[in-house]
Image (cartoon, rainbow, N blue to C red; front, side):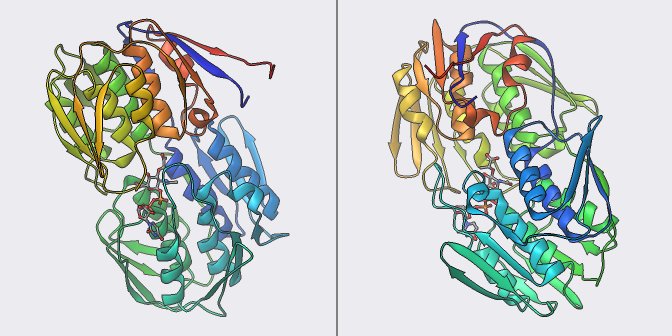
Length: 422
Ligand code: EPZ
């Protein structure tokens, strides 16, 4: 419910086990990849989050036969009734841009509404379109829609001007149908890229180099289906690791994969938290006092921009001064104003925020804005003295599965209040 809010009584030490869900940012491209084939595809361990529901709905609108039973999502794009992703869906989720690559590759035509900007920035897709044109497509923009068409895509040696996660995925999916070999350079290296490459390999596409900055793809005329299990969500993992650290608690995140977030684990250790892990998950023990440290976000395997807000919250309570620099998005400090209202001492200078640690945060009524800023405010509420109310938590529901349940299970005093729309 859009009007739901979350209420937290803070300063409770968290302890226990949290199960980590499937990765939202692997699920979205893999759902789009079901368009690449007329064969059935199976996706397991999908997280039940709003963005995944939206993407499944878009597939349905395009004519993909989808059904969901005992944790397995089945999709079959045997024949589409529509090759246009309407604005009404795209405006809710910019990841709809991931439909362009498969539709263009398989059908030679795609029409997707330009994703509007969102809270964290303009979010252009010029690099996606440049890759499609390099593969031989004609691209033009009209009435707020992107239209791409090509008789036959041809393999190319293409260099991305800058690193783009969904741009890399879109180019991979279009190149899966391009005649001959494609080399993509300056690619994103996030674990989600390898997840998409694994599915493409199951579909019969020769892909290698995924996870490095250069990916090689040999296209085919027709692709088979795939059956994949989502990798664990590394940003959900990072978020709950911070929850354990900031409440000086002791949490075990079952199913978390330490190799997916090396920079986050390093930075957590620098702040004094104790981290240990094995193949079953990651354990975090918070230690007083929290130590200050400096962070600059970077493409994977650097420190993820999606963990920046959560660390600003953690460092707000450090014993000393920290500087956090956001290098990926132009406006990803929405959480700063709200944290300041809780007593944090933060100063934005350009793309950096200087954090002078304070003794404590006090609960307040807060407004969520984008997904990860909202998560950082929940973390602040968990650590703060007193009551915190967070409004507009539909932002949270886009990317966190059952966050209040998971936190309550480890001792947080957190309630979801259903607003009757009064
Ligand atoms: C993906 O978004 C993630 N979303 C984002 O996670 C994440 O923050 C981002 O990568 C960076 O890691 C999904 O995977 C669904 P980009 P994406 O293209 O692909 C600029 C979350 O919280 N750019 O890597 O859209 C862009 O403006 C979300 O789960 C261009 O200029 O991000 C940004 O400054 C938020 N032109 C930078 O590159 C383009 O054509 C990185 O963007 C494309 C991107």
